[in-house]
Image (cartoon, helix red, strand yellow):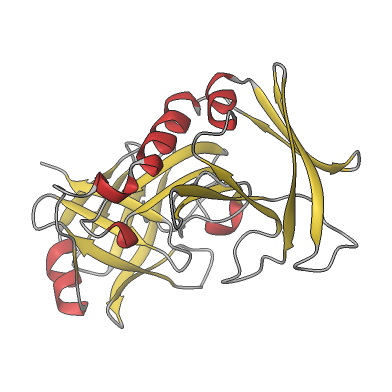
Length: 269
């Protein structure tokens, strides 16, 4: 959802979203962008706010040689560790699930993903059932380097992410063909139209270049097409955030940010 302050979360611990306006509560989000080509299908499970840099957990589906798996990143304090350093972690989910493992310290920063720890998990691992049924997750490198996440609302999303990722090679066999639009296509498609995003948020694109985004609160910003991308700005910030925009040839559009996070909306009737 490009309120593009930003929009979303993936099955990872620590990462990104889209551009926007006012701060919103942290939530779980499953974003599913299916393409006939499995390599262009994007599946992410995240916990965070609407901005890319506000994500705490990010899981992204990846295609392996024999089977698919999830690349997970979790934002956690890593003071004293260099980027790329192997580090042992413990992931606990109440009630009663513990998964020790080893990951790599990530640096984060603009364009670098979530700063924290990254590791991989197979789609048959018991982690997905634990996420579905759990109340709270704690990810820790040590007693004073821990991140605690509530799991309320993740249940069906964790299951859908696991099942879709496990079958990613055939997921888009009969799916729509998404076409990336250029500046003129973006302007023609969005001008004077309204979008409703998967989470129910609403956005209107005015011919004047203003845009209205309605979630828990209403925010006013600016939008434009530039360099073959959709861009938006949300005061009081002065930065423009840009996204690739694809159209399914029907009623749906999707926005993809620089980190591969996807938000999908449909035109309001």
